[in-house]
Length: 198
Image (tube, rainbow, N blue to C red; front, side, top):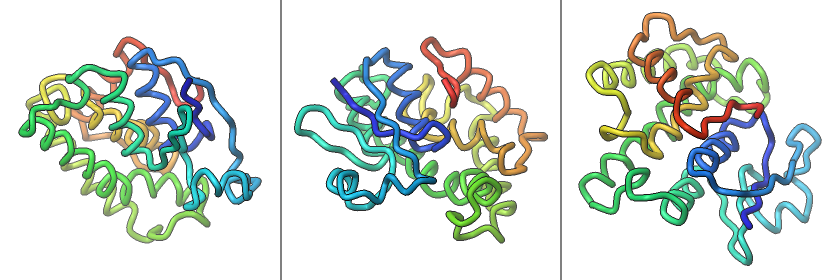
C-alpha cells in the first residue's frame, strides 16, 4: 500500500492527496509536523535527504517531489487521460506542470507562505506582482477552454489547483479572473474531489 508522508496544510501534499482521491487510490497517511521539525529527524532524512514533503513510499520504492509523485501516480493508477502517453499531448501537460512549479509557485503559492509561514518565503516582496502574472496567464489559457492542458482534467490541473484555490490565504483575490474561478468550480465538482483539510 502507498504511504504518504503528509502535513494537511502543505499545498504540495494536498496535490498528491487530491490526485489519489480523484483516482480512487487507497493509501495511508503518515503525519509529519513541519512546525515541530519532524522533517529534520534522521528517520525522515533517510527517506528524503532534502527534508521536504511530500514523500510517498510503496514497498521499497521511495519518491519525493510532488510533481514526480503525481506523474508516478498517474502512470501507475490512472488511465492515459491524466497523463497521456502520446508524446505531443504529454508535452502539453508537462509544460503546464512546469508552470505550476514555477509561475504558480512564485505567485499564489509563495503569497500564502508569506502570510502563513513567512520564514519559508524567499520572495515575499514580489508575490503580488508574480501572482497577478500567473493568474493572468491561467485566466487567458482558460478563457476558451474548461481545463488547463487538454480538453479534460489532467495532472496539470491538479498541480495548479491547490495554490490557486487557497490563494485567499495569501491575500490574493481571484476577483476579475472569471475563467480561473469557473475552473475552480469545475475542479470542485470532479468525482473524488477532496478539500485541503479532508
